[in-house]
Image (cartoon, rainbow, N blue to C red; front, side):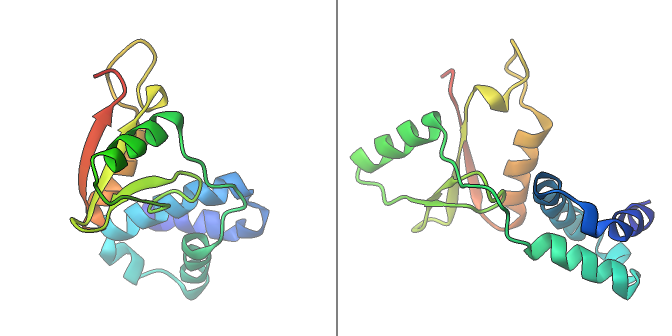
Length: 144
């Protein structure tokens, strides 16, 4: 199934918008990590398309949410060394703790489904990708 989907997407690689390319980049990273054997059997054209999705520069401006900024400033007041870095999504700036190789996931209201404390699939995917890259993730919800 992964092979067929990637083949179909590769055929229309030139018609993909910047937003779609940004999401495909994340999906390709997850698919490559979870289905390594499927990627070995891809045709050269599909491999080239996947490579271009994964390494394409996004045409979006990086953004730090208000909750993330408040959390970062609080950590800095506690004399904790932090850096802002796009580690998963080119548009989202993550809080990175370089001394401990940890990432702080600032979970604002858009990380949850409406009127619930259940996290969105995209929010969980973001954290999962950080963990797959070897970072320790600390999730800090806005409501606590």
